[in-house]
Amino acid sequence: MTTHGRPIRIGLIGAGGIGSVHLQVLGRLRGECEIVAVTDTALSLAEQRAKEYGVPVVPADPEKLIAMPEVDAVIIAVPNKYHKAYTLAALQSGKHVLVEKPMGLNAEDAKEIVRAERKYGKVVMVGHQMRWDWVPLRIREQIERGELGHIYSAKTGWFRRQGIPGWGSWFTRKSEAGGGPLIDIGVHMIDLAFFLLGEPKPVAVSGAVYAEFGPRKRGLGGWGVPDWNGYFDVEDFATALIRMEDGRTLTLEVSWAAHVDGDSLPFVHLFGTEGGAVIRGETGKFLTERDGKPVDIPLDPPADDEGSRVRLARHFLECIRTGRKPATSVETGLRSNLIIEGIYESSRTGREVVLDWSI
Image 1: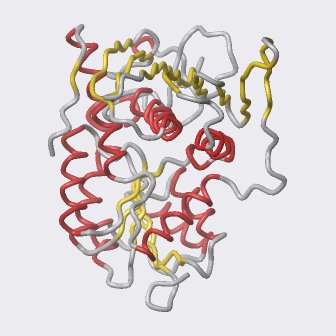
Image 2: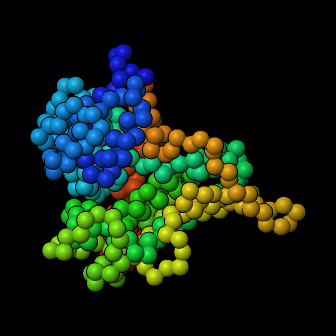
Image 3: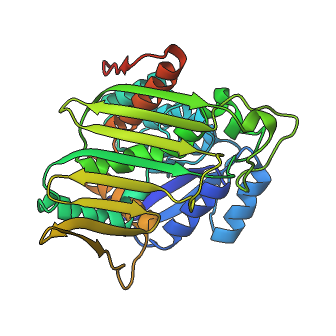
């Protein structure tokens, strides 16, 4: 449970909403790790978090935190446009990295991170917590036992009816976020679907994106702080078909704002030859046939579930201790960035886009 006989020492870059989640989770893993530093562009916020969680050091900026010799690993929980720079700086300083999604602002950023991870040999993990929920873990066990047969296609998505975050802030600026719901919540659904499909290789995408609500300041949500002097130049709806090397397909649909009838929960449908499975929010069920009749088998939640974020953090710490490749490795981060960039390109050109895996 230690590195050279001691807990793994972590520095956190970003003291906002997701940073607070990391602080809470890591606080449950004392003995395995300790948070030794936290910083943020809003230094007063970092100082507040340090006081709340007993973090001893608040460096003046991320560069100073990364340079601290007593930091073993860095968690990057800041706007997307900073992910690459801080990840590369941390690797060059000999640190392991847990970077929030998406790994890069675009595919080229992701490729740079892949090259750096291979050069420096440190652990780089992308913070996709949804694959660590109990429902997909249970479904994955059934898939591995062959209970769904051959899964030939899947459908995933997340429709928010009114969920545009922080209108005018970095969330709605392409230069800072990389895009809208496709790169914000779509990236989660892509990762979750590929986990359940057994990590096939995507080779081509066809898609379209739309901005029908954001430019009119409609469909606003409660996440993020709006900046009415800012602007909105990303999509608020995306749809795509992703083709795999082995012939299977994945359909993706996501929105920040849309006139939809539903519960605004993320979903995955798996279509197998012997059965199917569906995830909706924190629930799941198997779909099969007995005596010629359809049968639904709901999944019962575990009695005492420690939660997806705790499992994610444990996995990160275990990978640091053992040198094991993370489940959400740099290659999975690159895969998501390639797909997302391909969808934007397909929407722009009106054509299918072949994904360029060259590093």
